[in-house]
Image 1 (cartoon, rainbow, N blue to C red):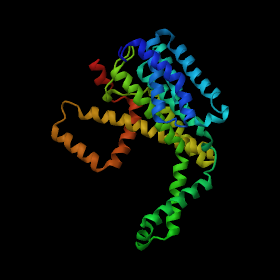
Image 2 (spheres, one colour):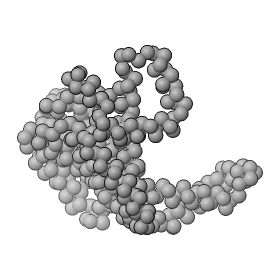
Image 3 (tube, rainbow, N blue to C red):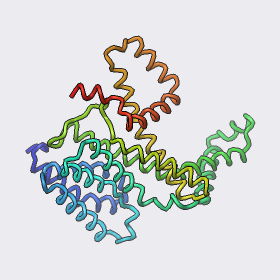
Length: 318
């Protein structure tokens, strides 16, 4: 019996959903791989369960988390949990209610980010702990001393106090945007699994969309508006939590917009009237001015949510 067999695949997916959380907590090794395997498992269960997909997915996933709580250290072990797999239920809800594919993708990504950031939400309204900053700075300085890089930098005119200030700024920045980085990792996890399912094991009623046709619903742009407003207002009234929420949300949206902008850019390069020489010039200039290109792609990706630059071409294709 091959893994492609419906019953075998469904049994294996249920086993992963029920046992996966317990393995992740007991081994304290809940990471990228387990999150993606569990997301794949819940989408597999939903694909094979038909109209009962959302109910079965919820029952099996909740059973797995309950089992992990019972056979571990109780609520004290919740810090080792990851809730990203629950975003798969939002995907199943979208499939059950027959939403458009771009709507399913958007709300699933929103759920994945929120669920991923939830355990570290306290970082959004607290000052960066100076103990963590100093630990990072001292460890980095010690590493530089051991490798001899400190002597090399000092000989170039830098002082140890300047390096300490620089590393302190770096550590503070990293800790401030950590929730945003966690959110980006959640986007990647869900996106990779969903792409795999749509590319090689599509759901009934949904067709695979190539990268050049990736879009999100127009109202997704309001998330960026909220992020920008939160950052500016939080900075103006010195409200740390609101400012951090806006900053981290802008970072997440920048990555999403960069992907959408890249999709539009590749779509543009495939226009039939564009000559090969002109394509070469555009690609060369894009690589040479990579930072500027990234900024332009982010802006274009955000504008595409509202203006839909590819509407006429895709409509003609359909």
